[in-house]
Length: 610
Image 1: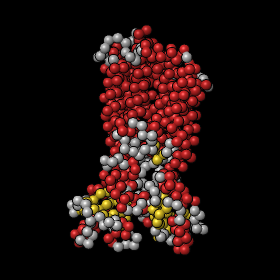
Image 2: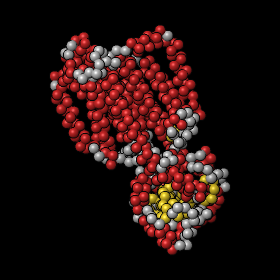
Image 3: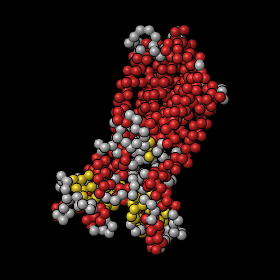
Image 4: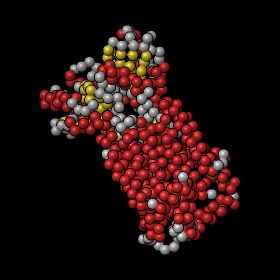
């Protein structure tokens, strides 16, 4: 196959480039607005108990039982909020009406209406009142953000001070901040990448090759994500993996191909034979490297979380797309350019990518003392990986909101002046025909559990569905709260019914459980694909096993460094990182796949060259 590609890209390079441009035009036309078809985040497992509880209650009530957003109303400039003032009362009623008309809002609770059980929404010091909005959707991570945007536009006042807190605005602000940070990182990375490429290739023309390959790969991946989004819910964060990984692989493959091209043309001139040998060697390496990256990332598609299977699919497409573009487009460009590949040189002489005496001395030093080097590097990697043993994982919550965001101070105020059931309540659903006495007895058992505060009496959503909300005494993701929710789930539900527990704590427990149960499938798939592809590349049984061992140590060390920085607080002052000081569990799985894919990528490049 590579012989045919070499022949095609040498005899008809302009036709190959024209086909690539046509593909870009079509893919760009279809995928240009892909962002508008993607969904935010997606960290939950649809099959988990907490998600099932949301579905059961939504069908019975018409809205999610958990308050998705809390609108905090205070007096202008602070001080007492005079609820007996007709102007203030009328303004709060108007805000509640505006809140009810916002997108994805299914129900609004206004304590001034005098409904039973709403007195806890008026602060005991009289300085504030909380209006709660229960959403008509279970997807608080995506639709909750749209609801928050709508609420902020509609629920405003010139009479009182209005702030927004709770899960939906917190998650929305974290998502927005993450997108902005990733965009800023890309804007910084692109110019630096261009400068580095120019220094490495020492030719402006040669430095353009990886940028062209990366651009083609990005457009192709956006096209694939647009198609995927029309078939299944796809996370917005897949866009960032498409951009970053496409450029990274493009640099790898272009550097490989251009370096090999220069070597072959130095011996045979700009001839078909030099072109053929470049494609058969460097092209083969790029093809296998792209497939190994695709295989490692594709393993994430077995995970049920939208975030994970989306970035897995995007990464797999990037691996294949980058390899295809490298094997077809790069040789065609080199054939068309010929000697002009070295045009616009910033410095005469061989490029850094062609020769380096320092790397040669390092390689010789390693070869002279292989055992000492292996033992030393292994010891360093294991030392860096050691902090993983005691890591404390976390999940999405209001704790992740940066201090500069509006909901940060609002959530702190709500926690200090209101019960946790307002923002971090545990939703309890009993499905089945249960008597009032049975529900009362179950409630008594629940409130007797350690670290569980008050729980309102069960309310019937319909004949066979009853629900209530319990307050925890500790933050939602704390160890104490997790133990409390586990204890609630361990209770025996009344005969003929089942008890479903939802809320942020329950979602986090379900998230960890889902990742643990599905991780063996993903890991097994990564190992299987890696071993097969490396065996096909090298014909060796030992080299794939050696690569797996090295990748595992590299991966463990990389994750250990994250724990040292973000949990042990090493250099957090320099990084201006405000917390939370834990590792997010879903990101850990994502980083596992990316780090393993890139480690295998570089292992392929080295082994193929050897």
